[in-house]
Length: 68
Image (cartoon, rainbow, N blue to C red; front, side, top):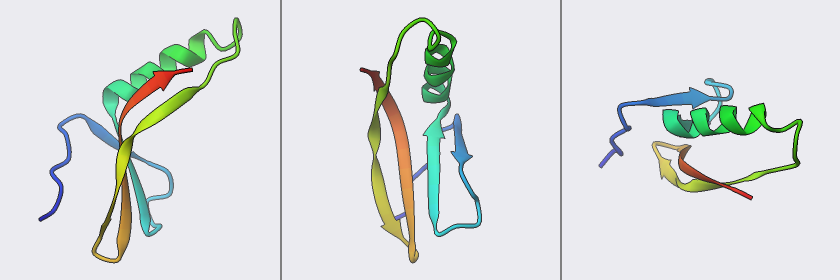
């Protein structure tokens, strides 16, 4: 059974590779907010998601991030 993509998701990276990376829109918004403050303090983020092997391809779904 194929995974149902969330409504607000975007594919990032090279779309022709066998590895597809999908990131939920609110995670991308969170990253943009972190980048606005990057000049003021050093920071990083821990990504939350899963890897699915399907149809001879790997799909990486990022559905959360935690600031570290």
